[in-house]
Image (cartoon, rainbow, N blue to C red; front, side, top):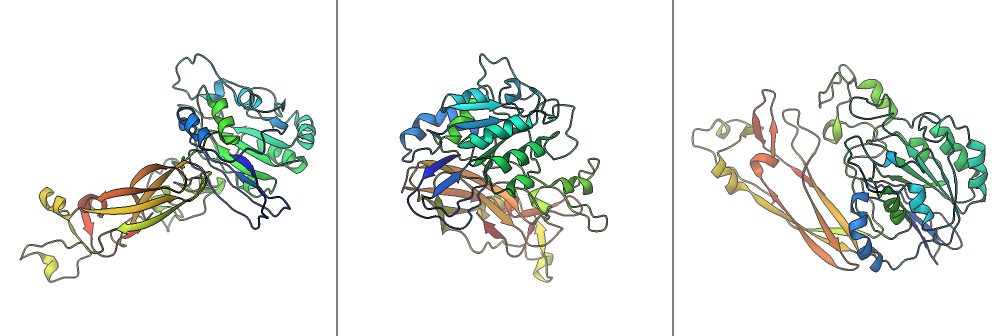
Length: 404
């Protein structure tokens, strides 16, 4: 995430989300517009930093700013890695990474090494935020909250972190960037609703060089292209979904809401597949089969009845039914970047089928004002089939909608 100085007035509110790191971006009216953008995919940052820097035409508005950094997770190295870690040669904490780029004033906000967070140093954090050009809050969990054999008990920020975020944002002189470290989604709707919080960046547990990677994203040295690998649910979701019930499909009789983007239709904080980039892309469908005809034996029952599905045909017949979908992707922005293209298919409403499912995804890297071709091969017997009530795979007949 980074700030770009602009010369044109900006209006309205732009909301974007990044996956594998996510963000909400707001651009508000100002005599000199400032854009707030945040994204991630921190696993790619170090390998591609040089190329991204060479192609960056914008400069970061934070480059000359003094930053206030408050967080339980800012100076602690071991939070950067998850349980199944090796022995790193060197850690770079978020504080070290950020300090390498700009003048930084740091205050823990919570008691050091305590993500449960009693907010004992809240007043000190508020004072620094009130005098800083921008405030970065590094919040989230650690292995005392979530690890192998130790599940989180809810989806909210641990301890008094929400209070810390809310209070600091209310007194911050400049924009507030919220960085979240965690192994999964958190209910941060409260943060999305605070105007001063211009960006939310999820970094997972980014590894031993995580602090440098976070700084690279914040200051625009790298144009990330990650997408969320899971949906983020509100805390209320946990009240209706016992951990002893792993059914995917919702049950309207019990109020069970279902699981995953395939079946769940309720509210989310962020949904599976969301992602941001510092550049912009458009997509154009250039090839897709409109009709697939499946040959039937002369005595097949579906010749004389209104079948909604048929058994998956033999392997050779399946191969003969396959077809391709081609899309043209263009980078319409001013910065090189990667774009992940998802292909979702929504099957006909038969056999309690999912509302949609991910058929495939491809990633393309493009320089500014260039385009690339993305190809998907559709296996009819696999991709256009569903599983019936008896566990048998059926090809669903009718209209299948493709969604990118």
